[in-house]
Structure formats: C-alpha cells, structure tokens
Length: 317
Image 1 (cartoon, helix red, strand yellow):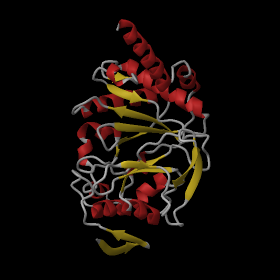
Image 2: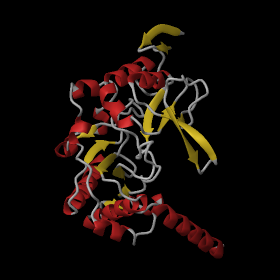
Image 3: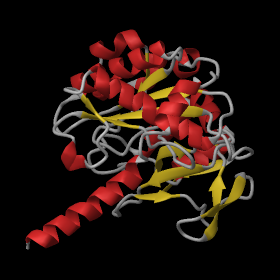
Image 4: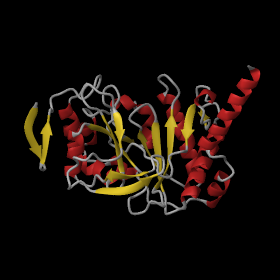
C-alpha cells in the first residue's frame, strides 16, 4: 500500500514493509537512514557512475547498473560502453537528495560508485585495498592485516583512510593524483605484496580462495572501472549494517556489527568522519609502480593457474 508520503518531490511508498528477511528494518528505516546521512553520502557518490543492489519484496536481490526505463528525467545519467555486455549502459549519477530518495524508494540498499568520475574515466581517484577475512568471526585478523597495510603505506610516504566494508572486512582508501590506470593497478599490487611480506602468517595475496589457508586476503583488484561500496552505504546483510568510517586508533575497539541503519546516525551526530579522515591526493612513489609491474595481475594469474590445475587433474585421471 502507498503511504502517500513525499519528500523533496519524491513519492514514497510501502514504507512499513520489511526491507528484507533478517534486516531487522523496514523500508522506512532505509529511507530515514539515507536521508539522515545525505550530506555525507551524496558527496562520495556525486559524479560517479553508480551501481546499486536492490531487493524487491519476495524476490532475490540484484545489482542494477543500467537505469530502468521509468527513471525520472531529473535523475542525471551518463552513458558508457560496457565491454562485457557489448552495449552502452546508462548509469545514474546520484548528485542530490532527490535522487538518493528516489533510489531508496526503489529499495536500493547498497551503493557502489566507480573509483573514477564520469568526466575522467582515465584516472582513478583512489587506490583501494579490500581486506577480505577468512570464514568465521575473524575481524581481529582483519584489523591486524589493516595494520600491515598502514605500515606499508607509511613506509612509502602515503596515508589512507579506513572504513568497515559493512560486511566482515575493511576498506582502505588512498587518494591519489592523476596517474595512468595501469600504474595505479601496479602500485596497489605492490602495496598488498609488501604488506603480505611483513606477516605472511596473517595476510595473503592469493587470489584463489582455496590457496588462502585461513588468512586475510589483501585484494588489490579494485582498479579501473571497478566499484566499491561507498562510505555510509547500507549493506544487504542481517541487521542491515553500514559501511562506516573509522579512526585507525579505534580499529581494535569496534565490531562491524556496531554500525547499522539504526545506530549510525546517532553515532555520527553532526560529524562526517570519512571526509575528515581523507588525506589530500598524493603522488604514487615510482618504486611502488616499478615493483608492481613485476607482479602478475591476480585474475590473469588465477586463470592460468586454474587451467594448469585442470590439465594436471585430467592427466591424473
């Protein structure tokens, strides 16, 4: 049923329905949360092609890149060629409260902007390390792995900001000056490799999951046209947690479960910790780039290794 409510010219419907199974939240809670953090989340979404994860009542969740035909004309879009699907995709640009509310009313729970801006697809604005824990309650291990990344960055003369992924891991963002994309990818691989060498008992760069041996995966592959869930975005997880900015000194005192659509606004108050903790763009050191170019691209290496193992398995049969 429609509630007949409206905000900023956006009609809001079915607000009292459960958001999704296990969310512990209604669609109204999603709308209220996004509206409460709009002055923080819109700046990290603005002018970046946006993919969202939506969930319709009684259906499975899905990632939406191409905006639907019924998208209002006031939602700004940018058309980009998608090599994988061999077609142009109309991505939304969430540049204002009205667009954010429209997405919330569409049951868009997660917000995944690109690391490039719509007017400059050649340059990523950040290097990103995605710290992916092994199975189980391993956030303590992720915190230790984040310390390895921070130590590596400091030794290279770089600084970054950290946030929860909204799931079980952490994201470390390092803002950078315009750099060729292949050099950004190389430097990110080098950071992960150096951090792994600091404590290989905790961290791994093994792209194949079966090779990680219960360690934290330091994922350097969020480059190019990749997306990363943004700061303050809710996640489609039990309890409806959010990706929440942290101070480095707080990492060992928190749990990702502390930050949800219910708790985050009160914890934030009037602050914007993501903006406050983000350093100015930095030049990537040449030695990081050079080292990274000697490290194989993880997905390519994993593809070749998978083929090699398949051949070996067939030979044994």
